Image: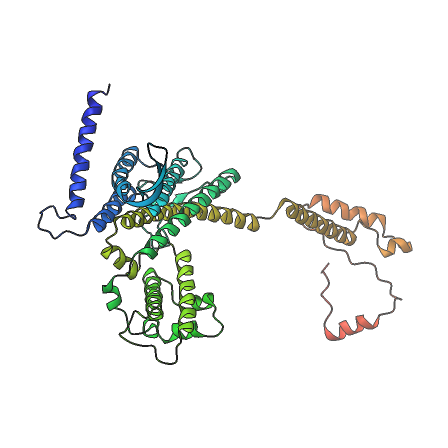
Length: 463
């Protein structure tokens, strides 16, 4: 038996579901004036708005709030339940009462929905589980508004996001490997969601409003510079992208719009569906096919290199004029999962970047600080220099042996003792170096004569 609280909760959920589906049936126009959008666009907007309210404030790597998580699970199940009734006829065998077998047509959920909806649910659960994994980590944190660290501003354009803080020496090796594993997992979710979204958008029909707004030919859409790079014999997509200014999100989106418009033009001309203008005799169908393949290569590189850019004009136009409810559900659900995966990946990259900055700072400090071996080497060098200086000084002191001592010409002992007495009585006075006894019969050398003549000889100490 269910309790009274559970019954009241079920009644409340039932009323909320009726109100939500009533709004969807009226095309988001509750006035009943018939000015609402199509059911497909209303369902797409409902999934987008639900994801914005559930994940719009996700600024940190932390588990999703239980209340928001419960609301997201409940309401996304309501919106996805519409796809259970989008069916197709498939052949099936049935046995009659008499035992004979016959083939009949039965209904089954449409093939693209049957394959992609469970896959998107799995990707959704993987992202929420990844956020739950950051519950028990304690090595990095985010500065609160009251801390001094919160005054530090981000250097990129995402100024509203908090800056992650790591220990002074960086993250531990185990945490670094675990964080990289989480990043790889989220990256796989991102790639899968991008693939499903691109497949659904490719299956949507191009609206006539978009085709009417296209230029006359692909060259007019791309411009002379881009068109020349694509039509060259040797085509290098990386070289073309490096020559373009892709420094901002707006410029990337503008470049993507030009490429997509040229693809649509070339494709329609190859299928002979566009009679407004002609390429002229200089362009063949084979060349158009080559140019289309090259443009699609550039577009694919753009989508993988810049996964977080907004939707292009062609994508927006397809979503706006789409009438297929199944496509609307798949496109919007894969798009919100792609956006959530990209945001989680960006938050992980912020922590990894903070860890790299901390390790680089520690490495720079170690480079500037001399190592123990170098310190010991410097001390030994200084000690050796000190010993050399002492040996040189001891060679010039009176107590050391001189050439006169070796020759046997010793100084009078009485004069030496008198000098010792003077040194003991006057310790504050520095002892002057005594001039050695000079032999009057010694010959003057040639260098001494030059010094005496040129004034190069240093003055002797006065006695």
